[in-house]
Image 1 (cartoon, one colour):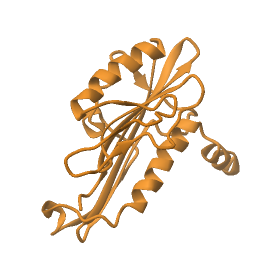
Image 2: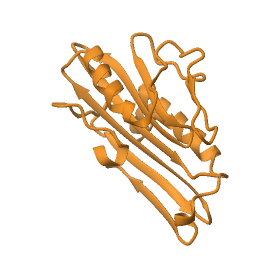
Image 3: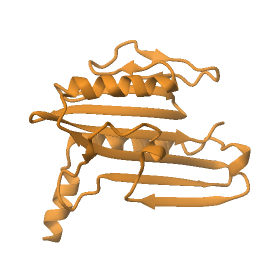
Image 4: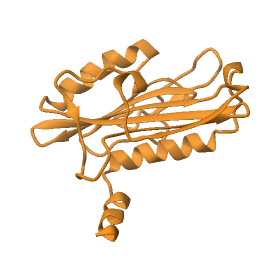
Length: 183
């Protein structure tokens, strides 16, 4: 049974793999210096719970938290800071009976408060945004599975990402927030 659970964890849906890929990318960026507020302390957060406030986006009306398997977590928060370095990643997976296009439009509007919304659905060739500190946000190699959609807003140091995929007659979607301490 333990091996069965480990196998499920390794072979989770692509959306979870994308969240893990974001996490691995963020861990690689830890060398960036944190702001003055993080200079004097250190901390670590590892939690299987996250809220709309944590991810910085509203939960879609009527949506509920989603688990691919009963033993999976529907959300997670991971962060570490100290000695002037830090990062934070928040992931929430939800489901709705509404169509993917309806959910996508809701989140494109919600993401707009963080700046230009990149549509990475078809690889987003040439889609990028530069902020005042020249931290460009781009789709790069991010491309969802066929029939799914992917949107981003913010900067490389403060990204909000939404992945939307069809699920029967409804939708499964992931909300991701990535913060890396500023240089």
